[in-house]
Image (cartoon, rainbow, N blue to C red):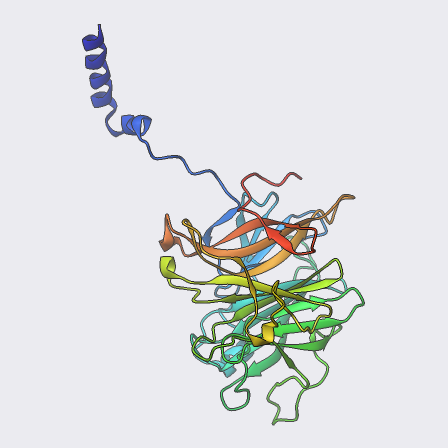
Length: 358
């Protein structure tokens, strides 16, 4: 009987060919996760108050816009700019071919989208600002109004900063601040006009856009490793939290990107890590780094869901990483839940593994 059964099984396998192989494969099926399935580096996200879900903006030619209702199923819904780079930025950075590291914030009833334009390894960079009344691309009010340059950098004019990776923070009292910087002497910050989204005052320097009275809020301690960038600030329970990324972002499975953070009593610091070391002297508690599967975890943002409901808001960390199972897909955006411990520090969870209920 057993011999007849084995002959029948062999016949079925030969009849269906390779279709039979998965039945006996020991390779586990990967569980679906809240991960955008295509290259979306340097993500920033926001939930639309009109019920149209969460929008993610990421580095790309023109800035890619992606939308989801449940943080699981994503679709591209367009670009911010029709051109790879706005004309004014192309004039200043002629070799630029894409827009980097956007940041989306809802201010005064409008969406402020900061972005940066540069070339790899260069300190000649610019930060710009585009504004829109709505994120619903089907609305008649949908239009990205480019407000042009916010600030810029060059080796001659600003030897202590590089003008990329902008992040705007709006405090409860209505005051606004802009954070930026990559490598060189670290992360800078300045109070800005929330009505214009730009610094109140620039230095008188032949119209080169250098904010007046900007300060340093984070840097590396060693001159041998100046990797620090991608600042992002949030407020929770009376404290301000500054995230930055360190290491190498873009080397596939060999990427060393990781996220560190500190907190302060005011938006401009001083930010200190869990051990009390100031981030202006190299401090920073590691909050997320590479795992066996996810490599180069970094350039994070933060967003909330539940703004349309009368319930507790959910906090989320958004970041990009390479999937070691398929690193050729590029830097994939992932969503992780954030909770808070009794000491007021955040706890970063695993990648979301079930759809967000509407």
